[in-house]
Length: 379
Ligand code: BGC
Image 1: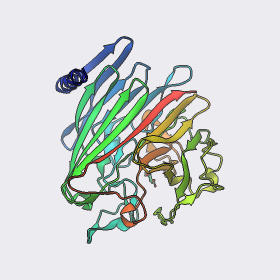
Image 2: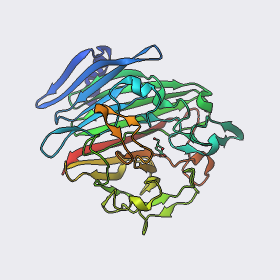
Image 3: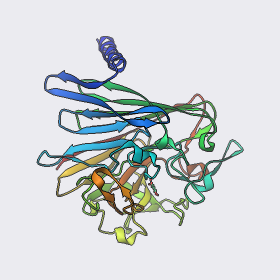
Image 4: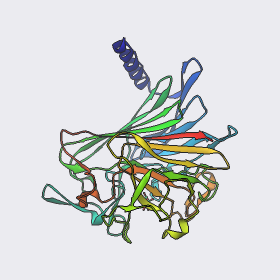
């Protein structure tokens, strides 16, 4: 019985992948409907870039492009059922290509976050990565995974739909050792989840840390600062950093600091007490490699709410500190400081140089596998 179900499931997957998806497609089962639409979004490196939009039975939709694996739109109904776009981004591919995107909605890596001076030693060999953030390496370097064209296949089932993105990052790309085959699957479900599954294999020992970099504003991407959002983070500790945002190596208690989000606090309440705003990794409680609750954000006016679940040890809470109005986004919105916040599930920054942090080494024969779920609703 189980075998037969799996056969039907894989046949449906093969069918939906082979059929491509020009125009619209629907999958129906009872009342549940998933919808998929694909349109041409432009060209990058002489390759066509498509925008895939998936809409679920509850009216939530996500748009994803195969440049940078970028989530360009995320429509979530508010308390009254009115959809609002809750992620920052641009209207057209040309603006993403102009290279001034602060990683809006992208997959970041091969090492998301910072590696001090872009250097690390692995198996007695010193590697020098591209440096693109002062002296440090940030989010994979000059041309990270956010700026490459991914191979893409779509899939649609009665309860879920999405894209499977693949990319071969060659040995030596941005200084990293090993040919790294990466697969990122975005899935929208009828339970209002946006699930991101990451997988990778390498042919040489390497280091790896992948994440997703959406800037959220649950009141709508153009609605101003995120100060009134209530945020809860399942972390008793955070990682202090030096002036170049490299960890000092300590894990400090959040208790008695503006980092204490163990109960709901408005993002704006204590942001002024943190130099520049929040840009810190939180040490998520109970790391055992399995999925667990990481964070909960809610915006009181729209009623929209988001929960994050992950199997990763940490989560970067970044409050859009470096936005300064020069990024002109969707609908001509000048994104100002603190107009969006990121909850980037990941390993700790600079882990390759911090022996006490959980390892980010991937060896040939091993499989890197991690998942994060962003759930949306109203309350
Ligand atoms: C980092 C910030 C960085 C930003 C770039 C975030 O993930 O934590 O320090 O400036 O990405 O947009």
